[in-house]
Amino acid sequence: MTRSVLVTGGNRGIGLATARALAAEGNKVAITYRNGEPPPGFFAVRCDVTDPAQVKAAVEEVAIQQGPVEILVSNAGITRDQVLIGMPEEDFRDVMETNFQAAVTVTREVVPAMIKARWGRLIYMSSINSMSGAPGQTNYASAKAAMIGFARSLAIEVGRRNITVNVVAPGMIETDMVQNVTDARRQAALARTALARTGTPEEVAAAVRFLAGDDASYVTAGVIPVTGGLGAGH
Ligand code: NDP
Image (cartoon, rainbow, N blue to C red; front, top):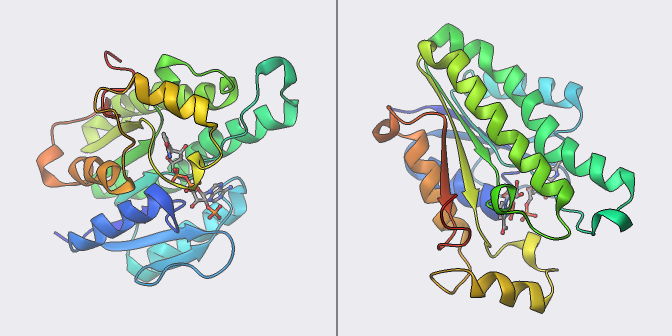
C-alpha cells in the first residue's frame, strides 16, 4: 500500500538512504532539507526542525502534496562532541533541541492525523551511545536516550489507535557525521564491534523499512539496534 512518508534530514546520510528505501517500496516520500539543492526524486520541503513554525508549515505542505503523514521517520540530528567540563552550555542545548525536542515538535504535528486515520508509524533515529554511553557525548547520549523514553510512553498512549512507535539505535555508520571522529575513537569503537566494521546508511534504512512496513504490524515500543554488535546487550 502506498503511504505518505516524511523523513526529517532526508537530504543526506541515513535519512537519504531511508527515503530511497521507502520510495522503492512504492511510498510517496517527502524529505526536509535546510540548504542547497535537495536530492531529486522526493517532495522536498525546506525546514529547520528546531523551528516549530517551520515544522508546522512543512507538515502542512506535505499533507497538501501527498496526503497527511502516515509514516514519520524522525532522523535529523547533530553532534557537538566535547567532554562535559569543556562543553559550552549552548552546545548541550543545541544537541538536545535538534535531536530530541525537534522530534517531539514534529511528532505533535503528525500524530493528530494518524489518530484520525487509525493508522500510523512513528520511527525515531536514536543511537546505541544513548544506552552504552560515550565520552564527549553527554549531550548527544542524553538526547538520544530521551527519545527512547518518549517513544515508549507515546507507544502506550497511541497503541489503541493502531499507531506503532519504534526507535532505531545505530552504531557507527559511514556518513558525514562520523567523518570528524578521531582515529583513536574510531578504532576503539571498531574493537568493540562484533562485525569489526562500520555500517552503511543502507543497512540502517533496512531496519526502518521493516518497521514502516506491514511485517512490523505487531512491533511497537521497540528499540532495534543496527550496530554490528557494538554495545551488544542493550
Ligand atoms: P548526517 O550528518 O549525514 O545528516 C544529518 C541530517 O540531519 C542532515 O540531513 C541534516 O540536514 C539534518 N539536520 C541536522 N540538523 C537539522 C535541523 N536543525 N533541521 C533540519 N535538519 C537537520 O548524519 P547521519 O545521516 O549519520 O545521521 C542521521 C541520524 O542518525 C541522526 O539523528 C544521527 O544522530 C543518527 N545516528 C548516526 C550515527 C552514525 O554513526 N552516523 C550513529 C547513530 C545515530 P542538513 O543537510 O541541512 O545539515
